[in-house]
Length: 209
Image (cartoon, rainbow, N blue to C red; front, top):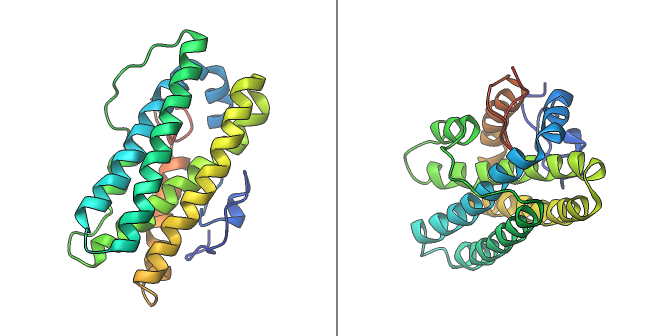
């Protein structure tokens, strides 16, 4: 595992072409495909959280006009994604339920630094990592899902690739000399989380125990 990931555009399920340091384990993909209704519930929750995270950054750094405008657009798009996933759930008879935060999000938040401007950089880099992982998993799942859901996941993967690039560019522009090394540390933690087994199936969870 490389200490510092390459910062290039996300490419489907090939984690080696992204900022990700480890591919999603095959066991997670197999479990997810066996439990699509449960996956959709967590996915819907994730889309709402993604919108909330973009808005939180917008409000935390209102003086950064370029960031605010960019993340305002991201938040709107994430909410549209939530609506699309909700419609897919309705068509399949899957009810939306509230969930507790998963291990992935909790542990990535614990890795954030608390002093500015380090925290701002970490928030942007973690945003990039989450979007890159989502992009990778959409690409892994889409070919094996029913056509309507598969097309939706294919479209969402393209959007997540845009979001990944946006968050990464925001980080690079705001910390040109520090982002790369810090990305290596955060990407290492992210890779540990998605390759360590856990009991609950989540969109960003590790393989099943």
